[in-house]
Amino acid sequence: MGNISDKKVEELQKNASEIRQSIIESLTEAGSGHTAGSLGMADIFTYLYFHGMVHDPKNPEWESRDLFLLSNGHICPGLYATMAHAGYFPVEELMTLRKLGSRLQGHPHRGTLPGIETSSGPLGSGISQAIGMALATKLNAGGKTSGRFVYCCVGDGELNEGQNWEAILMAAKYKLHNLIVIVDRNNIQIDGYTEDVLPLNDLKEKFESFNFHTQEIDGHNFEMIDDAIGQARSVFDKPSIIIANTVPGKGVSSFERLPEWHGKAPSKEEAKNALKELRTLGGKIKCEQLD
Image (cartoon, rainbow, N blue to C red; front, side):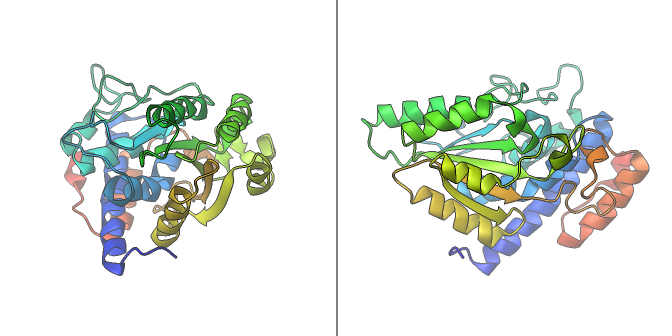
């Protein structure tokens, strides 16, 4: 495992619980959005923004920052909640999710919200965008290690798009050691379970055959996340893939592992029950907003 302390793990668990509560609150207020993936990736987002990435919410255009791209942009309620709790914008603004004129639209939009590196929505394009940034960073450093990393989150269902595999070939060709792709392996997509829609089979074997440094982890275990990111940052001759096995709807038992929660928001009653369940990891719950 990595060198992350027990105290830091407890802190991250508390942050993740508060972020999940904000996800539920904002989705319920919006009346639409993607619940399962947002909750499922909350631990990965929490780790990156509260421990793993080099970034500064007070200076989001800092030239030495790490870059984060959300290719599966529909799970942006999870990213928005994490960024708000990390200090990029007020937590209260989360309640404007998907509303007319809001900075928090249904997919991230570069130029509208500080800290959003690229617009996303059309699935399959994120790895290509991340490769461009990683290659530019490497070229700007004269081909040497700059210490700056590009993180790209993709959904497993998104890997049905052929563009991903063309991009993966290119990343391996240029040995983009500063590229770390995180696959949200939650086994669901809008049409059902991934292995029923279009089987992905053994993703680890696939990525290894494309000459990526490949790891497979529990995406809810902060020690494993820390260790995997540490290993990926220590590889200097190839790009890295981390296959994060996650539970869609994580933290709310009535939502977990059900494809129907891929793209719908909780009702007010479902939200109240969800928030009560999430209380166990701490954080103040604003149930009055749902009355």
